[in-house]
Length: 316
Image: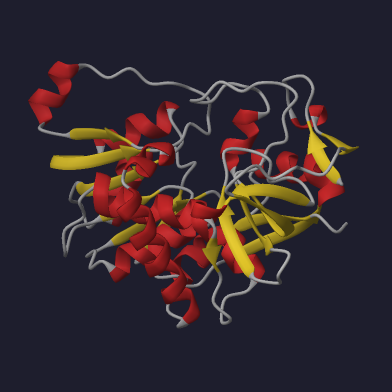
């Protein structure tokens, strides 16, 4: 089969389209023919081996897929690795049946980023009805879902951050009450203005660096900033005295830890798929790239040239 494999760590250039043996399913595993593989910003960290989990070479990246089993069943799954390929062996226990009303593209785009968006709002931020929410990268794969889910959960004012006018328009079409330029010279002031001069209750933070600092400064007493990404690759240090003085909370989130709560995973996936099937949740597909152009996809997502969810088509 064809797969994207990396034999050394680095940027997009280390990914090569390669012929590798078909995977041999172990006991309890099922072979899935992949129709769509999801691309996440975290994948750009994986290829560099600078994310939260250490990687081993050789490596086929990719953490989510949709496809078909040998009996023709349509399924989706979250993976530790191996998604950038035409076939993958998946533990039968983690296979998710895909409803007829949900396309392969929607399914592959929904699991990882949908679970992330839902979990940071419901579990980590403990969003309450009427609270204000700032969503970074509001036109991205996770952000576009978070904007919609925040509204579904009863958020009062949803403020989307995005880097272009087109992306801000998309965030507002999806339900953001206001969308502001994420590259504003004084981002803290822009957030406060967008929230009618008041500090905000919840921030979904995935950038780090100066953006993290600005969003934290715009947070109200007893507000919660949930950090779930590091797109800028600029870590931030926080002083405990500053948190005490302001009564603010910083909460970390990594999807891997959610699997210690399998009931949350099952409930979340069922809720998300049901909402998409009913037409109540829009999955924004920003582009489907041939498997052979995985390098270009990584270049585009790192350069912020994309919106919504990016996918790979292993048939090309």
